[in-house]
Image (cartoon, rainbow, N blue to C red; front, side):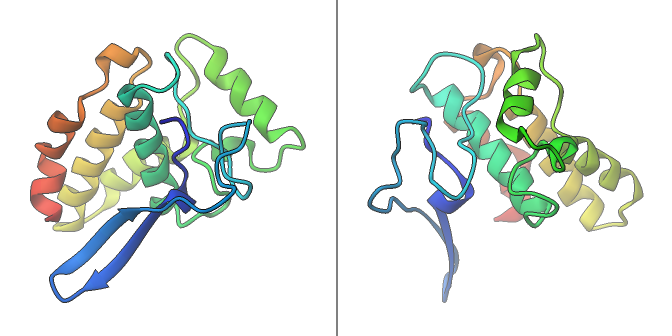
Length: 155
């Protein structure tokens, strides 16, 4: 818990379709709570809870959706900052926090996409928005996430 980052997740194409695995490498767990190559994605709320992991999964999805550009984190509004971690920490300290620009860009992409990509992006935007709820109790459980229409469509 609390250590999910894009480097933690591996996707491999197999004969049965994509396979997703969590990967832990030696030295990945650090006192700061993240892998050396990226920011750790820990959401507001208590440490080591599934609600924090749900937040982290949404952050990872946004990083993948934006193809790690312009940065390997969803708060792309701070990309050119000299104090990136401080700016993200300050944004998350607000109640509710500033939304990551990558999420706003995803919602914007939904408005201009044609089918079938429109439905895919709309479901992805709904899913990530739910996962980034400020209050941990407002975030979906893992079971609820897996029943979301995004996964029905994607799988």
